[in-house]
Image 1 (cartoon, rainbow, N blue to C red):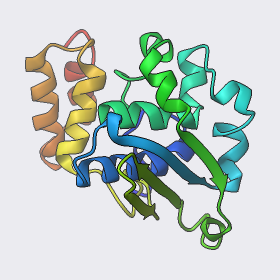
Image 2 (cartoon, rainbow, N blue to C red):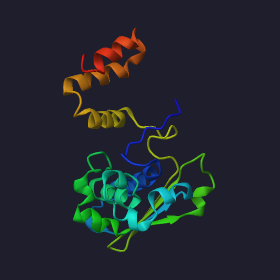
Image 3 (tube, one colour):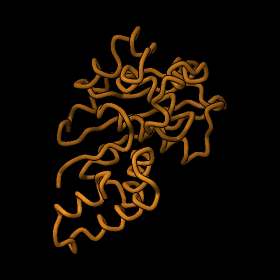
Image 4 (spheres, helix red, strand yellow):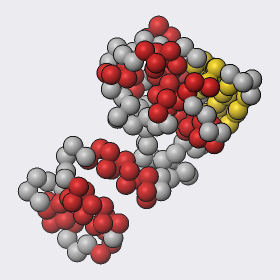
Length: 200
C-alpha cells in the first residue's frame, strides 16, 4: 500500500520537477513560446542520474537516454503538458523544438531539498517568462507517491495509455470496471487468466 505509481514515463528523480513545471504552466495558462528560462532544484541523490554529465543529458540519443535526462523531461512537459510514453519517442528526441527548450533548462543542487529527504522527495521549480514574470513552486511529494496518490481518473488514463496497443477498448473498460470492484471478485486467478491474457 506504500508503493509509488509514476505518472511520467521516466526516472523517479524527474517526477517532482515535471509535476512542478506542469503545475506552473497550467496554473498560469502559459505556453512554450512564453518560457524564457527554467531552473530546477534536484535532489543530490539523483543529480548524477538525471542532470550530469551535461554533455549527455542535453544530448540524449535514445529513448532510454531521454528517460534519464532532466532537461528533456522538462522540455516535453513544457511543450506538451505531460511526459508519458507518447512524449518519450525518438521523434521527440530528435525534435528541434524540444532541443531548443532543453537549452532553457538549468538544474541545480538545492540544499533546502535535502533537509527532509528521503522522508520527502522534494523538488523546486522556478520559471521565468519572457514578459519578466517569475513563477516558483516546490513539490514535496511527487504525484503518485503514497502521500500524493494518483486519483482513479489519473490511474485510468495511465492504464489506457499503456494498454491501448495491447487490449481493445471493450477489454480495457471491462478490466477497469472489475478492478474498481476487486473486493467482489471471488477467484482472482480466474479473473487474471480471463481478463489479463490473450485467452480472455
